[in-house]
Structures are given as structure tokens and as C-alpha cells.
Image 1 (cartoon, rainbow, N blue to C red):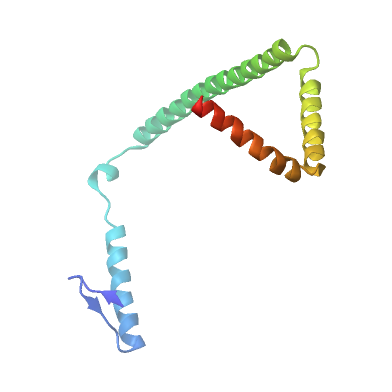
Image 2 (tube, rainbow, N blue to C red):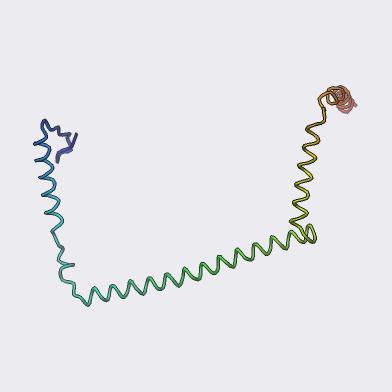
Length: 140
């Protein structure tokens, strides 16, 4: 379903009507494309060349600015990495990443051992004792 110039939907009963409508739209589009504004038609080759040189200078300027920003970003990243490494050495001493890996492995092993111990019965037996201790503190 298409729309005419008033915005109302237009239905085509046959394929020929549709093709005729499309040909009219295409002819209108080509007519609008061929219109050349006077300002563009009066430009000389020197004007175009001057614009080209201005755009080329602007691109070179932007490349230089991008290079500066890239160098600053590299400096920031490098300084952050150095800070993190120095902080790790200050907190954990020599070989901080090895010590951190050992702590993680120890935590994993400890968690695995705790999961294998049957603590359900121990918690069930200790629950009345904990409840009595809490009650004494709130009353006392």
C-alpha cells in the first residue's frame, strides 16, 4: 500500500498501474537530482583546490592530535600497571602474584574439604546451644 501526495494510501489494482506510478516517481526523482544550485556552478577549480588543501590541513591536524591522545593513553595505562605492580609488592612482598595464586588455591582446597565434612548433624546439635546463648544475652 503506497501513499499519494496528500498522504492518503493508494492501492493499485493491476501491475501496470503500479509500474506507471513507479515510473512517475522515478521521473520526478531524476528531475530533482539534475538541479544544480548557482553557488556550486560558479565555483572555480582554484576554489575547489583551496578547499581540498584546507581539508588536508585539517586531517593532518587531527592526526597529530590523535597521536598525542594515543601517547597520553599509553602513558596512563603504563603508569596504572606500574602502580598496581608496586601496590601488590608493597602489600604482599616479593612474588606477590605467586602468593595470591597460592592463597586462591588454598581457599579452593579448604572449601572442598568443608563441603565433604558432614556438618548438618553438628549444626543441628549446636543450634539449641546458640539459641540459648542468644536468649540469655537478650534477657540479661
